[in-house]
Amino acid sequence: MLKLKTILAVAITVAILLLIGGPKAVGGEATTVPTAIASSTPATSTPPTVQELVKKYATKYNVSSVRMMETIRCENRDLNPKLQSGMRYKFSDPKRGIRIGDRERSFGLVQIHLPDHPEITYEQATNAEFSIEFMAKKFAQGRQGEWYCY
Image (tube, rainbow, N blue to C red; front, top):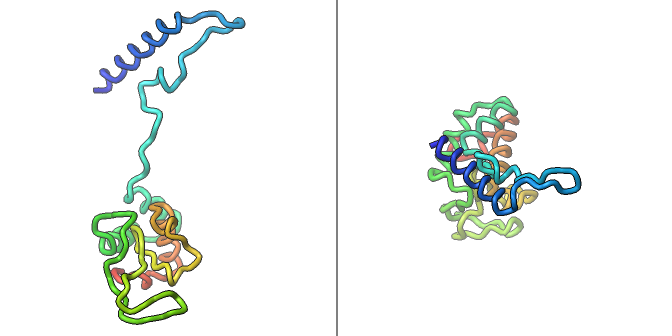
């Protein structure tokens, strides 16, 4: 497969060179094909997986990646970074915008409860890297109890 990609990249490069008239001297320098076109590797990279992020931040904060992953899997079985908790509030707290019967406002891979963390936005809570680092910091502070599944 790699050989086929390399052959394809060379063929594309040759075709482009033929289209632009081959290497021509322009101001004393030869024209070149942009690296992204000539390269046999894609210009884009894939984002890190949940497991890779957990390992990265567990190592950074010296906490158990296994316990983090177990907690995340329990809180968010499908590893959906946009997930909102399906739980319903059984109490009201108007100061925090919580009303009995409303759907709990916990979001993301690690289910950050926004009323308890007003400094965190929905966008942050649903960002995989932010939320996993948030969890690792909390674990390092001994605050694993913030997660029902811990």
